Amino acid sequence: TIWIILIAYVTRFLPYGLRAVTSTIIQVHKELEEASVVCGAGFLATFRRVLIPMMRPGVMAGWIILVTIFMREFSATLFLYSPGAEPLGPLLYFLYLDGMRGRVAAIGLVISVISVILIAIAQRYSRLVIDCNRPPGAASSIPAISEGTRIPANESLPAEAAELRRGAVF
Image (tube, rainbow, N blue to C red; front, top):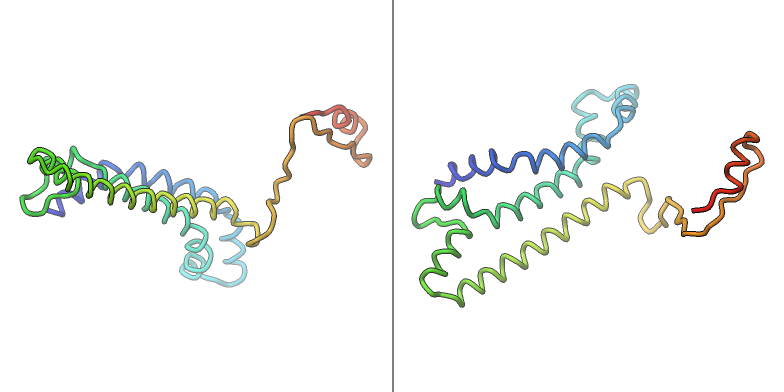
């Protein structure tokens, strides 16, 4: 049944989802939660107004990556599906065995297009996580340093640091 397949997917692919969500949670600084509490917000308000908006892009990207993995999963579903409700992996396999190459190609193309669209959305969400501190349309806050660029010396630095920076070349 669908529930057995769902349990198999969750147990087999839980680390992939946890990796995306864990990396997103690590990026949320504790100071933001503390500032919300200092301003009088409780746990639920902090979670709803601070944590969820900051974690949403990473969680969505993780789910999209999991969906693309689920679409290409074959081994677990082959053993656990019920007749009449075949997931895409076994369906493609059985259509191929029956010699219906046109249907296999059509379903494979649809799966490929859906996967590419979902991966593009996941990349967009992951880019939003990286650029969350920059306003829309603004240039990157990280300056580009090309090879051979000299870093100007800063006279307000201590003598040793200014001397090190004068000769620094990237």
